[in-house]
Image (cartoon, rainbow, N blue to C red; front, top):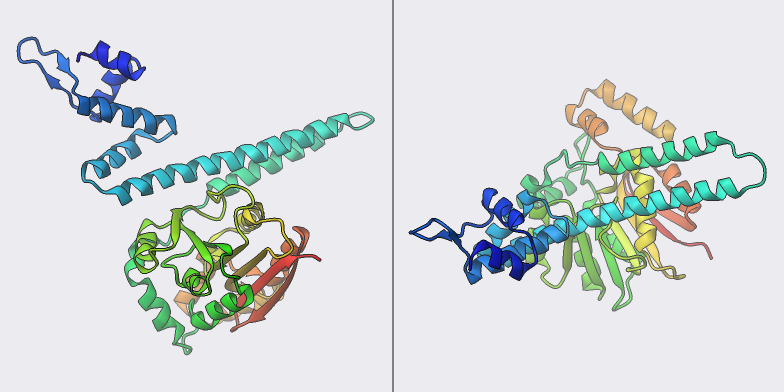
Length: 357
Protein backbone atom coordinates (compact mmCIF):
# COMPACT_ATOMS: atom_id res chain seq x y z
CA UNK A 1 0.00 0.00 0.00
CA UNK A 2 1.05 3.62 -0.40
CA UNK A 3 1.61 6.12 2.41
CA UNK A 4 -1.94 7.50 2.33
CA UNK A 5 -3.40 4.02 2.58
CA UNK A 6 -1.01 3.14 5.39
CA UNK A 7 -1.86 6.33 7.30
CA UNK A 8 -5.59 5.71 6.88
CA UNK A 9 -5.30 2.14 8.09
CA UNK A 10 -3.28 3.12 11.16
CA UNK A 11 -5.20 6.26 12.02
CA UNK A 12 -2.08 8.42 12.02
CA UNK A 13 -0.89 11.14 9.68
CA UNK A 14 1.33 10.64 6.66
CA UNK A 15 3.58 13.28 8.18
CA UNK A 16 4.09 11.09 11.27
CA UNK A 17 5.02 8.13 9.06
CA UNK A 18 7.58 10.26 7.19
CA UNK A 19 8.99 11.42 10.55
CA UNK A 20 9.50 7.83 11.71
CA UNK A 21 11.20 7.08 8.39
CA UNK A 22 13.54 10.05 8.85
CA UNK A 23 14.48 8.71 12.28
CA UNK A 24 15.26 5.30 10.81
CA UNK A 25 12.52 3.47 12.69
CA UNK A 26 11.02 2.04 9.48
CA UNK A 27 12.55 1.52 6.03
CA UNK A 28 9.83 0.81 3.45
CA UNK A 29 10.83 -0.43 0.04
CA UNK A 30 10.58 1.87 -2.99
CA UNK A 31 9.07 1.07 -6.36
CA UNK A 32 11.75 0.83 -9.02
CA UNK A 33 9.82 2.84 -11.56
CA UNK A 34 8.71 5.94 -9.67
CA UNK A 35 10.48 5.69 -6.31
CA UNK A 36 7.24 5.75 -4.34
CA UNK A 37 7.33 3.99 -0.98
CA UNK A 38 5.50 0.71 -0.63
CA UNK A 39 4.33 -0.37 2.82
CA UNK A 40 4.09 -4.08 3.55
CA UNK A 41 2.18 -5.80 6.34
CA UNK A 42 5.46 -5.96 8.28
CA UNK A 43 5.86 -2.17 7.92
CA UNK A 44 2.30 -1.71 9.16
CA UNK A 45 2.98 -3.94 12.17
CA UNK A 46 6.16 -1.98 12.93
CA UNK A 47 4.33 1.34 12.67
CA UNK A 48 1.61 0.02 14.98
CA UNK A 49 4.30 -0.92 17.50
CA UNK A 50 5.95 2.51 17.23
CA UNK A 51 2.59 4.25 17.68
CA UNK A 52 1.80 2.12 20.74
CA UNK A 53 5.17 2.87 22.35
CA UNK A 54 4.78 6.56 21.61
CA UNK A 55 1.31 6.47 23.12
CA UNK A 56 2.78 5.44 26.49
CA UNK A 57 5.33 8.25 26.26
CA UNK A 58 8.46 6.32 25.29
CA UNK A 59 11.24 8.43 23.78
CA UNK A 60 12.38 7.85 20.19
CA UNK A 61 15.77 6.67 21.47
CA UNK A 62 14.17 4.05 23.72
CA UNK A 63 11.80 3.02 20.91
CA UNK A 64 14.85 2.44 18.69
CA UNK A 65 16.37 0.18 21.34
CA UNK A 66 13.06 -1.60 21.97
CA UNK A 67 12.60 -2.32 18.25
CA UNK A 68 16.12 -3.72 18.12
CA UNK A 69 15.24 -6.11 20.94
CA UNK A 70 12.09 -7.15 19.05
CA UNK A 71 14.09 -7.71 15.85
CA UNK A 72 16.48 -9.98 17.78
CA UNK A 73 13.63 -11.89 19.38
CA UNK A 74 14.77 -10.72 22.83
CA UNK A 75 11.53 -10.70 24.81
CA UNK A 76 13.34 -9.96 28.08
CA UNK A 77 15.10 -6.94 26.60
CA UNK A 78 11.80 -5.52 25.38
CA UNK A 79 10.23 -6.10 28.78
CA UNK A 80 13.03 -4.13 30.43
CA UNK A 81 12.35 -1.12 28.21
CA UNK A 82 8.63 -1.34 28.95
CA UNK A 83 9.39 -1.55 32.68
CA UNK A 84 11.66 1.46 32.38
CA UNK A 85 8.84 3.41 30.74
CA UNK A 86 6.45 2.24 33.43
CA UNK A 87 8.88 3.48 36.09
CA UNK A 88 9.02 6.87 34.37
CA UNK A 89 5.23 7.08 34.30
CA UNK A 90 4.97 6.18 37.98
CA UNK A 91 7.53 8.88 38.79
CA UNK A 92 5.42 11.40 36.88
CA UNK A 93 2.29 10.16 38.63
CA UNK A 94 3.89 10.49 42.05
CA UNK A 95 4.97 14.03 41.23
CA UNK A 96 1.51 14.94 39.92
CA UNK A 97 -0.09 13.49 43.05
CA UNK A 98 2.14 15.64 45.24
CA UNK A 99 1.29 18.72 43.18
CA UNK A 100 -2.41 17.94 43.62
CA UNK A 101 -1.92 17.58 47.38
CA UNK A 102 -0.10 20.92 47.50
CA UNK A 103 -2.88 22.59 45.51
CA UNK A 104 -5.49 21.17 47.88
CA UNK A 105 -3.58 22.55 50.85
CA UNK A 106 -3.57 25.96 49.15
CA UNK A 107 -7.33 25.70 48.64
CA UNK A 108 -7.81 24.75 52.30
CA UNK A 109 -5.73 27.73 53.41
CA UNK A 110 -7.76 30.04 51.20
CA UNK A 111 -11.00 28.81 52.79
CA UNK A 112 -9.90 29.69 56.30
CA UNK A 113 -11.53 32.64 58.03
CA UNK A 114 -9.70 35.95 57.82
CA UNK A 115 -7.24 37.32 55.31
CA UNK A 116 -5.05 34.75 53.61
CA UNK A 117 -1.37 35.09 54.42
CA UNK A 118 0.15 34.75 50.95
CA UNK A 119 3.50 33.78 52.49
CA UNK A 120 1.92 30.40 53.30
CA UNK A 121 1.37 29.81 49.59
CA UNK A 122 4.98 30.69 48.84
CA UNK A 123 6.14 28.29 51.55
CA UNK A 124 3.99 25.49 50.15
CA UNK A 125 5.21 26.14 46.62
CA UNK A 126 8.83 26.24 47.80
CA UNK A 127 8.43 22.99 49.70
CA UNK A 128 6.88 21.30 46.65
CA UNK A 129 9.73 22.55 44.47
CA UNK A 130 12.39 21.20 46.85
CA UNK A 131 10.71 17.82 47.00
CA UNK A 132 10.47 17.68 43.20
CA UNK A 133 14.17 18.48 42.91
CA UNK A 134 15.00 15.82 45.49
CA UNK A 135 13.18 13.22 43.38
CA UNK A 136 14.83 14.30 40.14
CA UNK A 137 18.41 14.61 41.42
CA UNK A 138 19.01 10.96 42.26
CA UNK A 139 21.40 9.04 40.02
CA UNK A 140 23.48 5.88 40.24
CA UNK A 141 26.99 7.23 40.75
CA UNK A 142 28.28 3.76 41.67
CA UNK A 143 27.47 2.09 38.32
CA UNK A 144 25.98 -1.09 39.70
CA UNK A 145 25.58 -2.52 36.21
CA UNK A 146 29.35 -3.03 36.16
CA UNK A 147 29.39 -4.45 39.68
CA UNK A 148 26.57 -6.93 39.12
CA UNK A 149 28.76 -9.81 37.87
CA UNK A 150 30.90 -9.83 41.02
CA UNK A 151 28.37 -8.56 43.55
CA UNK A 152 27.73 -11.86 45.33
CA UNK A 153 31.43 -12.68 45.56
CA UNK A 154 32.11 -9.19 46.90
CA UNK A 155 29.52 -9.25 49.66
CA UNK A 156 30.70 -12.67 50.82
CA UNK A 157 34.37 -11.68 50.77
CA UNK A 158 33.79 -8.39 52.60
CA UNK A 159 31.23 -9.94 54.91
CA UNK A 160 33.88 -12.25 56.29
CA UNK A 161 36.53 -9.54 56.68
CA UNK A 162 36.53 -7.62 59.95
CA UNK A 163 39.98 -6.03 60.06
CA UNK A 164 39.42 -3.20 57.55
CA UNK A 165 38.80 0.37 58.84
CA UNK A 166 35.69 0.51 56.64
CA UNK A 167 33.81 -2.51 55.36
CA UNK A 168 30.46 -1.86 53.71
CA UNK A 169 29.29 -5.47 53.93
CA UNK A 170 30.71 -6.57 57.30
CA UNK A 171 28.11 -8.81 59.06
CA UNK A 172 26.16 -9.01 55.79
CA UNK A 173 24.71 -12.51 56.29
CA UNK A 174 23.89 -11.85 59.93
CA UNK A 175 21.98 -8.68 59.01
CA UNK A 176 19.98 -10.38 56.24
CA UNK A 177 19.08 -13.25 58.56
CA UNK A 178 17.91 -10.77 61.18
CA UNK A 179 15.76 -8.99 58.61
CA UNK A 180 14.14 -12.25 57.52
CA UNK A 181 13.60 -13.29 61.13
CA UNK A 182 11.91 -10.05 62.09
CA UNK A 183 9.67 -10.03 59.01
CA UNK A 184 8.83 -13.74 59.40
CA UNK A 185 6.48 -13.80 56.41
CA UNK A 186 3.40 -15.96 56.50
CA UNK A 187 3.12 -18.29 53.53
CA UNK A 188 1.44 -16.37 50.71
CA UNK A 189 2.19 -12.89 52.02
CA UNK A 190 3.27 -10.42 49.34
CA UNK A 191 6.54 -8.57 49.89
CA UNK A 192 8.65 -5.95 48.15
CA UNK A 193 12.45 -5.74 48.29
CA UNK A 194 13.72 -2.28 47.28
CA UNK A 195 17.23 -2.19 45.83
CA UNK A 196 17.11 -5.97 45.62
CA UNK A 197 20.40 -6.31 43.70
CA UNK A 198 20.89 -9.99 42.97
CA UNK A 199 18.04 -10.93 45.31
CA UNK A 200 19.91 -12.15 48.36
CA UNK A 201 17.44 -10.73 50.89
CA UNK A 202 14.37 -11.49 48.78
CA UNK A 203 15.60 -15.06 48.41
CA UNK A 204 15.41 -15.55 52.17
CA UNK A 205 11.78 -14.36 52.08
CA UNK A 206 11.01 -16.73 49.21
CA UNK A 207 12.40 -19.61 51.28
CA UNK A 208 9.86 -18.77 53.98
CA UNK A 209 6.95 -18.89 51.52
CA UNK A 210 6.50 -15.22 50.68
CA UNK A 211 5.57 -14.01 47.19
CA UNK A 212 8.35 -11.57 46.43
CA UNK A 213 8.84 -8.67 44.05
CA UNK A 214 12.16 -6.88 43.78
CA UNK A 215 13.06 -3.54 42.22
CA UNK A 216 16.43 -2.09 41.38
CA UNK A 217 17.93 0.67 39.25
CA UNK A 218 20.42 -1.75 37.66
CA UNK A 219 19.38 -3.90 34.69
CA UNK A 220 22.37 -6.19 35.18
CA UNK A 221 21.59 -6.75 38.86
CA UNK A 222 18.03 -7.69 37.91
CA UNK A 223 19.22 -10.05 35.18
CA UNK A 224 21.35 -11.90 37.71
CA UNK A 225 18.44 -11.90 40.15
CA UNK A 226 16.15 -13.48 37.54
CA UNK A 227 18.66 -16.26 36.98
CA UNK A 228 18.91 -17.02 40.69
CA UNK A 229 15.20 -16.69 41.46
CA UNK A 230 13.08 -17.24 38.32
CA UNK A 231 9.93 -17.41 40.47
CA UNK A 232 10.45 -13.83 41.64
CA UNK A 233 9.01 -10.81 39.85
CA UNK A 234 11.55 -8.05 39.28
CA UNK A 235 11.15 -4.54 37.92
CA UNK A 236 13.26 -1.49 37.20
CA UNK A 237 12.54 1.20 39.75
CA UNK A 238 13.77 3.07 42.80
CA UNK A 239 12.76 4.25 46.26
CA UNK A 240 11.37 7.58 45.09
CA UNK A 241 8.76 6.32 42.63
CA UNK A 242 7.78 2.73 43.33
CA UNK A 243 6.09 1.33 40.19
CA UNK A 244 3.15 -0.20 42.03
CA UNK A 245 -0.39 0.73 43.00
CA UNK A 246 -1.28 1.88 46.51
CA UNK A 247 -1.52 -0.82 49.19
CA UNK A 248 0.08 -3.58 47.11
CA UNK A 249 2.28 -5.28 49.73
CA UNK A 250 2.06 -6.88 53.16
CA UNK A 251 5.64 -5.91 53.96
CA UNK A 252 8.55 -3.95 52.48
CA UNK A 253 12.25 -4.67 53.07
CA UNK A 254 15.50 -3.17 51.89
CA UNK A 255 19.15 -3.85 52.65
CA UNK A 256 22.30 -1.82 51.96
CA UNK A 257 20.41 0.56 49.66
CA UNK A 258 18.79 3.32 51.74
CA UNK A 259 22.13 5.14 52.08
CA UNK A 260 22.14 5.80 48.31
CA UNK A 261 19.51 8.49 48.93
CA UNK A 262 20.20 12.01 50.10
CA UNK A 263 18.66 13.22 53.41
CA UNK A 264 15.71 14.93 51.66
CA UNK A 265 15.15 11.87 49.51
CA UNK A 266 15.12 9.46 52.44
CA UNK A 267 11.92 10.83 53.95
CA UNK A 268 10.28 10.83 50.51
CA UNK A 269 11.27 7.17 50.20
CA UNK A 270 9.55 6.35 53.48
CA UNK A 271 6.38 8.06 52.25
CA UNK A 272 6.52 5.99 49.05
CA UNK A 273 6.99 2.81 51.07
CA UNK A 274 3.97 3.70 53.17
CA UNK A 275 1.93 4.34 49.99
CA UNK A 276 2.46 0.83 48.59
CA UNK A 277 2.10 -0.88 51.99
CA UNK A 278 -1.28 -2.27 52.96
CA UNK A 279 -3.02 -0.41 55.78
CA UNK A 280 -3.37 -3.38 58.09
CA UNK A 281 -2.21 -4.04 61.65
CA UNK A 282 0.27 -6.62 60.36
CA UNK A 283 1.99 -4.49 57.70
CA UNK A 284 5.67 -3.91 58.39
CA UNK A 285 8.85 -2.33 57.12
CA UNK A 286 12.37 -3.59 57.75
CA UNK A 287 15.43 -1.59 56.71
CA UNK A 288 18.96 -2.90 57.08
CA UNK A 289 21.72 -0.44 56.38
CA UNK A 290 24.70 1.47 57.66
CA UNK A 291 23.66 4.43 59.79
CA UNK A 292 24.87 6.54 62.67
CA UNK A 293 23.05 6.29 65.98
CA UNK A 294 22.79 10.09 66.25
CA UNK A 295 24.55 13.31 65.20
CA UNK A 296 27.22 12.96 67.91
CA UNK A 297 28.10 9.53 66.57
CA UNK A 298 28.40 10.93 63.05
CA UNK A 299 30.72 13.73 64.17
CA UNK A 300 32.93 11.36 66.17
CA UNK A 301 33.10 8.78 63.38
CA UNK A 302 33.91 11.39 60.71
CA UNK A 303 36.60 12.92 62.92
CA UNK A 304 38.20 9.53 63.50
CA UNK A 305 38.09 8.75 59.76
CA UNK A 306 39.86 12.02 58.96
CA UNK A 307 42.55 11.30 61.56
CA UNK A 308 43.06 7.71 60.39
CA UNK A 309 43.43 8.86 56.78
CA UNK A 310 41.74 5.80 55.26
CA UNK A 311 40.81 6.84 51.71
CA UNK A 312 38.03 4.27 51.25
CA UNK A 313 36.39 5.24 54.52
CA UNK A 314 36.51 8.95 53.68
CA UNK A 315 35.16 8.36 50.17
CA UNK A 316 32.24 6.40 51.62
CA UNK A 317 31.40 9.29 53.93
CA UNK A 318 31.46 11.71 50.99
CA UNK A 319 29.47 9.62 48.53
CA UNK A 320 26.95 7.84 50.75
CA UNK A 321 24.31 9.28 53.03
CA UNK A 322 24.27 7.19 56.17
CA UNK A 323 21.10 8.25 57.95
CA UNK A 324 20.79 8.93 61.67
CA UNK A 325 19.06 6.07 63.45
CA UNK A 326 17.39 8.51 65.82
CA UNK A 327 16.07 10.57 62.91
CA UNK A 328 14.90 7.52 60.96
CA UNK A 329 12.92 6.28 63.96
CA UNK A 330 11.43 9.75 64.42
CA UNK A 331 10.39 9.87 60.77
CA UNK A 332 8.75 6.47 61.02
CA UNK A 333 6.97 7.54 64.20
CA UNK A 334 5.62 10.58 62.37
CA UNK A 335 4.24 8.24 59.70
CA UNK A 336 2.44 6.17 62.35
CA UNK A 337 4.88 3.34 63.09
CA UNK A 338 6.51 1.95 66.21
CA UNK A 339 10.13 0.87 65.77
CA UNK A 340 12.73 -1.41 67.22
CA UNK A 341 16.28 -2.01 66.07
CA UNK A 342 19.36 -4.11 66.54
CA UNK A 343 22.99 -3.13 66.00
CA UNK A 344 25.28 -5.54 64.14
CA UNK A 345 28.48 -3.47 64.21
CA UNK A 346 29.51 0.15 64.64
CA UNK A 347 27.41 1.31 61.67
CA UNK A 348 25.19 -1.55 60.54
CA UNK A 349 21.66 -1.66 61.99
CA UNK A 350 18.40 -3.40 61.22
CA UNK A 351 15.25 -1.36 61.93
CA UNK A 352 11.77 -2.87 62.09
CA UNK A 353 8.70 -0.62 61.84
CA UNK A 354 5.11 -1.71 62.46
CA UNK A 355 1.83 0.24 62.85
CA UNK A 356 1.13 1.86 66.20
CA UNK A 357 -1.46 -0.28 67.96
